[in-house]
Length: 177
Image (cartoon, rainbow, N blue to C red; front, top):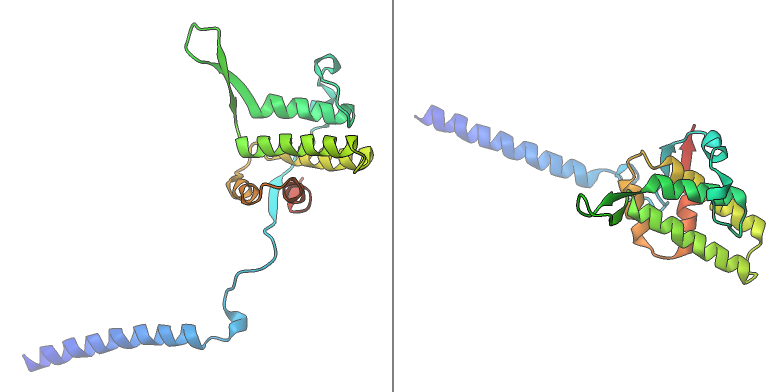
């Protein structure tokens, strides 16, 4: 019986030693090799596709006039077409409701568009610069429709300012063609 109790105690001692060894290793590791949170903002990467044929195929009679040009109007038309769809409220009823596929991204695009147009009208930004920014935002958003954008959407929800959202779309997203 004493032999069995000695083996049992030896086993407990071994388990305790392994636990304390892991504890010691984690606290004696130099600070440089520990994982730490980076102060750099997170970068996002999405698969990109050339959309030239889609943009060219948009009928100009279907477009609303846009302050920043015809190409922006075509891309906004594609955004509306790809991000939204309608479905009947009740079968047989002619009323429909509009469903937005990625509402956080869609609403951000609309907010950025509205803000850039406002800045152009007030003379705070040139028309060419605003068109360049909005063109980049629209290109990125058209390419992320079929991607997993959960982390990107969470990042969009962190700050409600338009400047933050523009920076996120333009500087922190990379399209891989």
